Image (cartoon, rainbow, N blue to C red):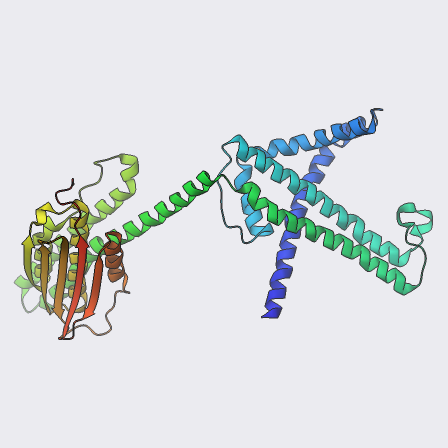
Length: 412
C-alpha cells in the first residue's frame, strides 16, 4: 500500500510538471514572436524600470487577451482537473462575465509565468549540474559557475545534487502553488455553482424519470407480448383459434408499447415543444384497461376499488397506476399461472394499494434484476409514501404501497 501511495505521489508530481511545461511552451511561443519588439524597447535608452514595465506589458498583454476569451475557461478547467489538481472535478462552462474572464486570464498568465520559470529551472539546472561535475572552474573562464570553486569530487557531487534539487523542488513548489490557486480562480460565484448543481440534479432526475417510464410502460407491454407469443406457440397446433387470439393479444400489446414509447419520447421533447406536446400519461381511471390486458395474457386478476379514485391528485393517480402496472408485470413474469388480487382504497387520507398473488408455480430463477421494485420505491419515496414487498407468510407475495393524498381534486 505504501508503495502504491508513493507511486501515486510521483505520478501526480509528473502530471503537475507536464502542466507547467505546457505553460512554458506557451511562454516560449509568445517570447519568440515578440523577441524583436522586446529587444527594441530594452535597448531604446529608457530608464530600466520603464523599459522593464513596457516589456512586461508587451509580453503579458497577448497572454491576458487570450485568457479573456470565454472558451479558455473550460479548456483550463480540463487541464487543471486532468494534470494539475486531480481532485478538481468541476467542468465550468465558457466565461460569460468580465469577472470570469479576468480570473481565467489571470490563471493563464500565472500558468505561462510559472511554466516559464519551471522550464528555466530545467534548462539551467541540469546543464549547470553537469558543468559542476566536469568543469568546476566554470569551463575555462566562464563566469556562469564562478561560485563553484574547484574542490574534491564529493564536494562537486554535492553541489551538482544541490543544483538538481533546486530545479526539481522549485518546479514542485510552483506546481503545488498553482494546484491550490487554480480551482479558486476557475470557481464561479455561489449563484453559478448552485445553478450548475441544480442543472446536474435536474439531468439526473430526468434520466431516472425516463428510466422508470420506459421500464414500467414499455416493459409491461413487452412482458405481455412475450407471454402471449409463448402461449400462441404452444397452442398453434392443438388449438388454432386460441393461438390466433393470443397472437391478436400480442399485436395489441406491441401496439400499446409503441404508444407508450411515443409518450416517453415525448417527455424528451416536452421542454422544446412546450405544454400540451406530450400525450397524457395513464392513471387509475385507466385501471380497467390495464387489468384487461393482464387477463388477456392469462392472469386471473380480481379488482376491488373503494373511494373516489377520480378525485385523486393527478400525480398520485399516475404514480399509483404505474405501481399497479409493475405489480401485474411481475405476476405475468414470475408467476403467470397464479391469481392476483388488486385492492385500491382511495377513501381515506392516504391512497392504499395492495397486490397479492400466490407463489405456487412461480418461475424459479426468473429475475428482472430488481429494477421494477426499485422504480416503485423511487415513485413512492418521491410522494413521501411508504412501500413494502415480499412474502406475507401465507404462501403469497404482496406488494403494498401507501401514498399520501394532500389535495384531492387538484388540477390535472
